Length: 211
Image 1 (cartoon, rainbow, N blue to C red):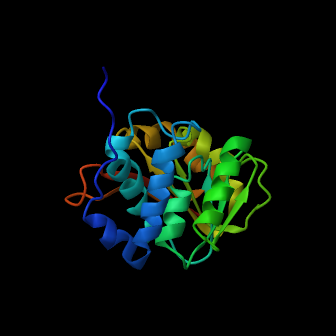
Image 2: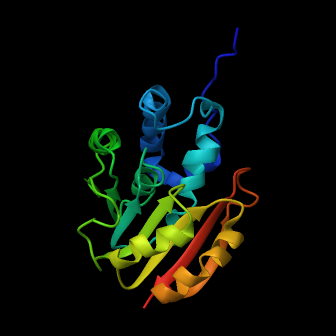
Image 3: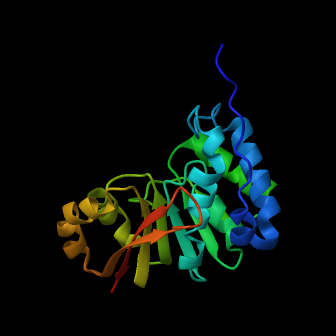
């Protein structure tokens, strides 16, 4: 008999990151815990680390955003798009996702949570109708930087930023994407580590600006 997985207890830092909107984060994580595996949004072993590995991991990026229109590429379950929209009601988000099943989930969840700062666009980043309109773009667990940069750079307005969540090999990815970085004319390229001393699951971010 296999042990039943239990949803991870809410960490204390959740209130710090979400403030008076923490209840929306709780509602979202309960919905994700209830239907996420069924819909193929999260893996079958994620419940014991859903807060730390996913919700808090994404929320740590919220202070890097600025008011404007932010595109979340390959939004999937809403990680980080819905999490960031909860944490930053002062920012407008467009969640760009090509898969119909996931688009239906994103629309239903953003409506259920009353997220007036979210719209969902069913498209691939290459085809999304936001050329040079976005102030920032985010992405999490989508693809390598060498592929992600050339398929998203056209979406950013001059001075816009890429804010991509990456894994432990972020510096190797940046090196492997050097050609794409040069071709896109990216400036102020950096890798950031967020959440040290706050959560066991730190967040690594690739950040760069287009001219």
